[in-house]
Length: 135
Image (cartoon, rainbow, N blue to C red; front, side):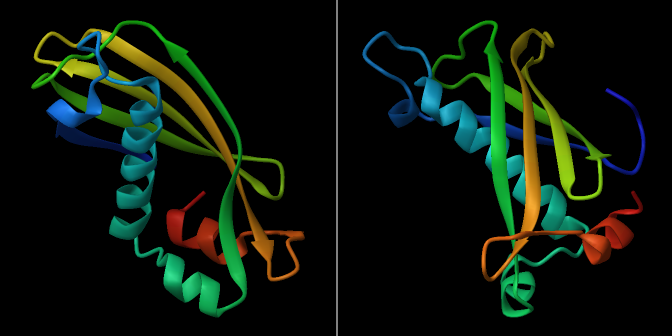
């Protein structure tokens, strides 16, 4: 991933209830980890979902691609990394990875595409967001 102002990482620890009967993290929980890291990234850069909604703009996920490489287990520590890029006029793409700590083993590789929509659900250029993020 590129090192720039639109990169970010957040560390987590697997909790017991996130695991299935096989003792590994249930696949749906990886999406929660990825989403939480995206939200924290945006919040730390001054992007408020509530303020955007009040202004008639909502950020939505339009596509999620996940490659599961290796499972996490209870109490594993891991970091979610992301790199944000602009794609076209309305799409923002989060390239994300989940890496186990401390060995850096690649657990998940993901590409999450999002867009901004108005109150009628129509795509809009996310100009203010792009400006705040320096894209």
